[in-house]
Length: 114
Length: 113
Image (cartoon, rainbow over all chains, first blue to last red; front, side):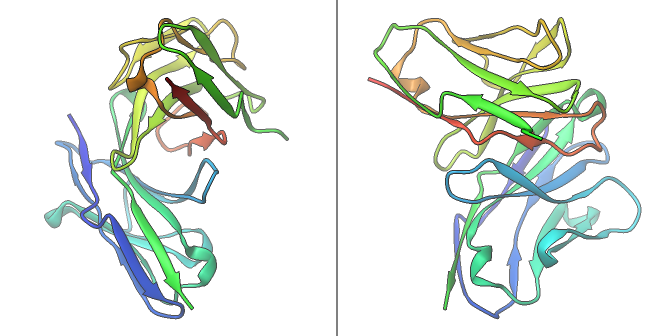
């Protein structure tokens, strides 16, 4: 069965600083990988996804992520964080027939200091 | 375009009561799913459906039933509520195929006393 680990429960950065959120996955085949963001009281919104090809993928709101098969990682990055980026971030891996079963990590809560 | 609509937004139940969480989508998505979100545990898949008349169990199906009689609706039934089912529940849908992104509702916060 697939699994996802987000090692950092809570990260605090200053506005304008760079950001990297870690994600490690476990899956036997080539995974489908996603990053979602959740603002308070809201559902989740897709930031970006990886299926194959170029290992550096661009997403919305200036986010990018890099797939590293050798490290089983899919870390999310942003060069300069804005106060509006404060939210909870979830990494997820898809598996099963047509990726029917999506497994989420525990989430990383991001706080942005002014 | 309403997207994925969940009702109610909040619900308090007593142990042993039953209820149905409603989920409707207007995007003609074949795939629909229910997740529960608990602190420190991320989202866990309860049940999912790949089309009308087809449902399957996810990671934590015990205590929950689903049915899919139409493409638009995917209700989640709690047969006999327990305090362990206190959680935030999210419905999500997408087009068929793993490459399509999931669209989430805004959640239902359920408390079982």
